[in-house]
Image (cartoon, rainbow, N blue to C red; front, side):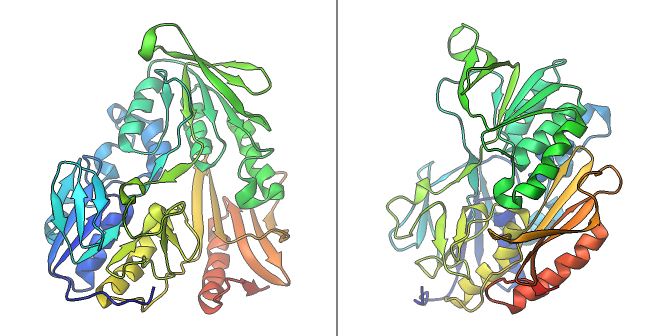
Length: 414
């Protein structure tokens, strides 16, 4: 990807109006781009914060005066919208990128000519195959959260959450806090084992029991069951692969996400579980960059808040330079709020890394949580904290410094 973009940047189109798209628009102006800036968003909403959707927003409704209302989800206020001086085309999807990457075609028939394009189309929630039933939800967008919250306010519900990842765990925590009867179904032997390893994944799994939710692991879902009644029939249960039937009034499907790349079919860009980019977020076309959940940067696609906020600075710099002049290598970091505890993880765990608990106890989480590090060949490669934010930040800073200095991300010496 060493080609150089041709000509000056007079018009830049940002495709995607969520977190990564907003940060890209901010960076374009901060880095001196004063041309025409167009932001296209598939949703009708101005950019909003997604992490609270499975937590504060879901757990409390606006009427109680204590919840996080929709206005509080906004990522930018009217003053910033004005200062960005962008044209916002919301509620409209991009359906094609032209063969030279010099234009974006919208689903309403419009074609936007562009000297530069930022792809920030994010990802969509995976859904279960089979018939659809009322009461079955995914949780990815504000509209998803509105629909789920409306279902949860109809009195005590039997909730089954399919998938024990972070979205599933956070949703389960919120539903349990609201007093619902909640069961989590996870096909793997332990939820989050791929990210955390079995030893610490088992610690996080115990948070469910502490919060009053049931966790069923090592079993898949065979089908959803619904009451008779045509296409709008209500869900009544979840049939497991081992034959058990879990009664359910509400089902939340949290089985991952699919990057939104369908609109790029037929374009020159390489797509494989995301838009393939070099280390600087630059695609096969130097005037097209990709950021956030849709971007596979240097072989890695990271669906984390930090990727969506840190990649745009480098991507925009490279876009305006017309070539890759800087790499985007933020330290992987994510957090999750569950059952009143904050789980934080930084770094990159490798198979065979050993775990060392340096504060607290994995057996007594209620007494101050824990801080653990992953180690390999005498170097710390990652860290996990449960309610140990201050000492975790010290380890995270050391990891970030080592990550920036070491192109392999090998961690720092203990």
